[in-house]
Length: 423
Image (tube, rainbow, N blue to C red):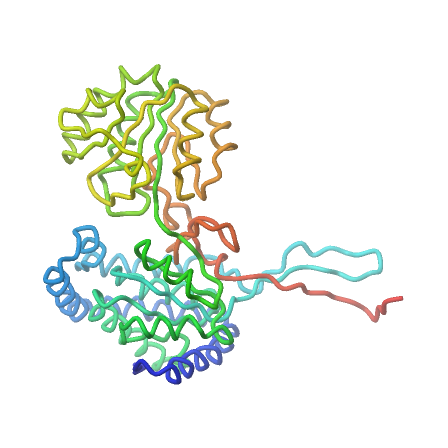
């Protein structure tokens, strides 16, 4: 396993080794990559007890540090959680390898054939909090897409991350593959991040995953392009033409099924024409499901027994808990305006049986995922058919929304000629 201190020279050396390894990774065949990934899935399962034991140390330390319940939920690994990691890796194995695919091959008037080929990005740095599954799944996605990866997890998951890293490196060694295809940083000091973000000559992309503070810090200090996802303020809009039963079920699922997830609802809007019918059902369902704390506008407060009057800050909030804001809106256009004002560009949902209004919602809302009559909890790379996601981009360059294999590649032009020269 790589050893690292806070010396910028050592960080530079790790990045340089990763750059060399990225050229090796880029040349691996699909079969070779899949063999590696299957072996990693087996190794993680076979070392389940050891990983869970190390994870327990992180949980104890996290509670002592006073980590939030949302953070602890992301941190914990169970036996089923280990199986889920291995299953996610096997799903990546089953995905089509985008590397080497040539598209849009077209014949020019001068006889040249011009197309574009998918190629790896090179070296990807992941900076993340909690979520030890990211260590394995990010490594798997980068291997399958022909990239090298440098993984820097947070201090709250250090034991879990190093246990998983040990499995990864043993597999790479056993298959005589450069270990620097996957580099895991065991030093959790902030100075390491500072050094990492300076390695613009060797690292091609930085993907931070964690709280808004971490992502803003990375974005403001990086000399390397950054995929940004500051927070997930996801909205549900219950239109006046909504199926009320669908709306209640989707609201409860989107808020309570996993409130610590970035794709959970944080605000729901209700058209005034359906509010009197919908809000009593919503209030009862949210209370029965998880006693959800509600921050309600003046026009909806009376429907919630323990509701609090909502402030502007509540509509900006990413609660990541059994807590939600609600507002009654006077029209479809008012709902659109509210979402566009408070959106984090993550996921927005409309509940409506009116196709024209649903289509208008899709056209006028430009978040990374826009949904009709479905829970925001489906806004996830796996659920959208990408396999495991390496992150969610809420900036439009170079990827937008959940990022799977193809988002970890770029394109180069490929030109076939037969002796042509330019006049």
